[in-house]
Length: 220
Image (tube, rainbow, N blue to C red; front, side, top):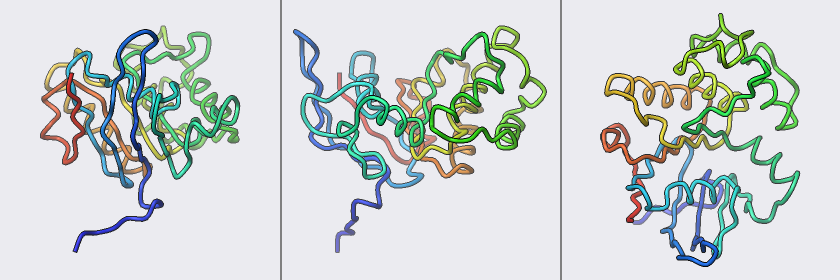
């Protein structure tokens, strides 16, 4: 007998999703459904629509057809401040570039993530996640005082501080050698499990296929 799920079993659902580029082509995406901590790879070559899909899931772009649900909330039913607040509370993002604010310390960058979600600043939680990422001795430094690897870990801390339902990472292993690729992926999975987050990684890095039981493949 086929197992049936109710809507609340899923942290992410997409249905009939497509995106039309202005004056250009239309991308159509097969449905994606993720249960809690069902860590998944989005695999595809350059031009297959990985970034477009992440923008739709993150509520940064609106679909031409279909919808995205995160924690049972249809994202295009929200707009403006309501969407920003919901995204900050339920989604965490790790991009290829960290986009940390240069005039703030690492600790202040993470505090800002809590404030944008409408949450009180929780310095003990910030200290704890920085310790897990071996950044506790660098919390008062600014991004230009850190190495590239430390900046990357600071971005991970910022993405995880609000214990997001869904943690989205876009090409987190780009330009990394094999050793550091697997160290980063192991760290992301470990921290996502500790925080109760579901990890969705977009990549063209085929080295990662054996590290995940679930994959969503895009065709160019």
